Image 1 (cartoon, helix red, strand yellow):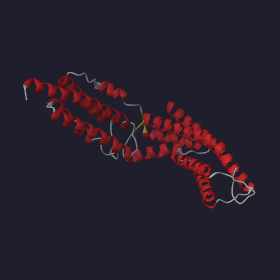
Image 2: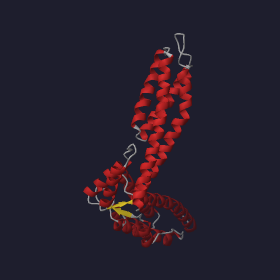
Image 3: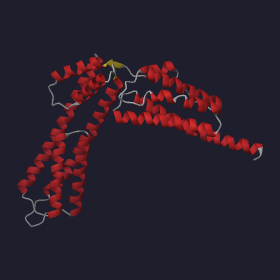
Image 4: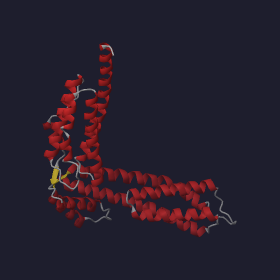
Length: 309
């Protein structure tokens, strides 16, 4: 291959590598940010594997385009990643800072080798980016105090954080990431609101379908497609209730779904008083869900208030 053509081909390879490197580094940094928030064990393993795979791909790809400094800096990061692999082993802030320093070396090697700027956070910035922590034992005491003071219907939000904090103590972790608590509370609030909105949107439609089931003839006056649609919507509500752990709503929507499936299969007329009883139970369920969501809001506010003091 002529020298100029060879140089042009190498340039194209490097340009392609630069694009891939940006993507891998973005995935690595996103996973590292989440990993610092003390996720659950399965999620921890997945994030650590994402970081390891990104670094390995980066080093291997650098080797194929003869960027030896980038290759060396990438594979030198693997021991730092190994320190983060096991979710049962406490991960210190020093472990994260050490990996951030090595990522900085990779950014620098990439910039020198390709001439393309790869912004790297300094170790000081990495340390500042680590979220504030609270002593895990202090957090346990705060949450236990909140449980004693709680006058609302328990949502188990306090208990969920408490159980995780107690587990961390057993594994020797002395500090709890505040950002992890905030993320859990925000995710819970968002899930509650999505679920409540879905229920409120479907209540009127389901009430209309249920009341149309009453008939003086031998068959209910509801088209099959409408019944199928109603059963599908109840199935969605049942699934949504499971996702937010609304146990009473799960039970109700499971029963309503079974009821609609029986009507679909047997096509029987339902006495008006029985239908009105189901409609009443639906309305009561919606009210109970609204109270359940409000209970969650109060519990989250209590947790956030305790963390601010």
